[in-house]
Image 1 (cartoon, protein in one colour):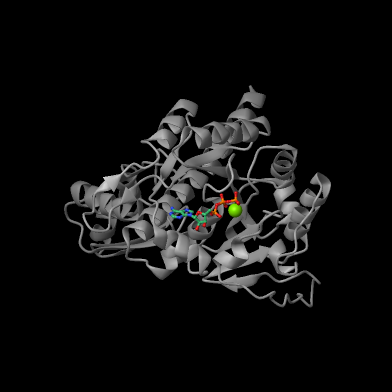
Image 2: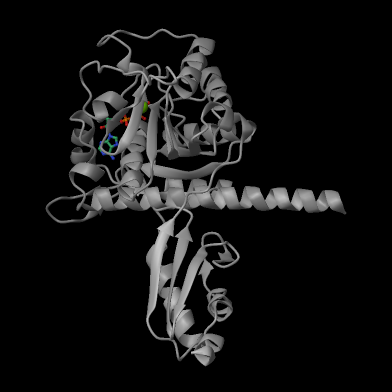
Length: 372
Ligand SMILES: Nc1ncnc2c1ncn2[C@@H]1O[C@H](COP(=O)(O)OP(=O)(O)OP(=O)(O)O)[C@@H](O)[C@H]1O
Ligand SMILES: [Mg+2]
């Protein structure tokens, strides 16, 4: 027994697991503090690997890399049981903690041009992240044309309840996500005429006067454009980062570039670009058609050195999903469309983790720099 223990110690296991890299975070999983609760029973070993998001695109790869490393380094090892868990890391930001104390990360979905599918992307990404087990909220910050209620099938003005303890409004819950929209407060079809300060004031209230509870990701669907109002909004919301949605046409790309510039002006990291209406898959032949041109979003991502999160095809079912309040990732989860969006949501979650780790290591550099 004693001999076995000395052969197989937690240190031996950790030593071997240092060879397993998280390719996104570009560090080994031991250094990242992901290996937890190592349990050794004779030659059998069990432990947890705590990922930085339940929507990790590399979950299976990391698990099989662990098994491979251990089998290589410790030939006498018996059963290996790995429990993949997750804990989303928190964006350290005093401004955010003041208004959204339970919310770990905030993500804006933006576009330069209108009608490129921002709201469609925001809703589907939110639902996709929730399907992977993340706690997700969606805040419709498009005060001019709130379309989130319709896209989630909330067609009647809903009753908004108050939290008795805090007096805050409680968000609605749909398809596993918490939702709040100015659309819930308005009479059907009433036009909204807001001035800039009112717009940002309304969004501020939707952060502080709503009890969002504990969330891993709170997604903001922004109004289109890059004018003063949008600029004020992105300065009002304490953001972990932004996603830019574009279609492949040049007219949309030009505006998407303006969006990139806007976020860089206010020092909000761009977590990635999503190209919507990227291509069309003919239902009869399965052939792909690049209706609006090829690869514009990807080229732009390369040019500006921001991640390309993926392209979503154009398909009537995506529009119908929006019009009928049944987002495609929920309604038709087995389609190629849903699969693509799920993958984009995982790429986004990975980018949030990357952003947080790189911000944390920059902070360490600054502290170390100060000591010198
Ligand atoms: N990939 C797609 N395939 C088919 N239709 C789509 C797709 N993406 C979005 N649409 C449709 O295009 C229209 C515009 O989409 P959406 O409302 O999401 O755009 P938006 O950028 O939020 O617009 P706005 O700028 O007005 O807020 C909607 O009818 C939506 O259902
Ligand atoms: Mg919209």
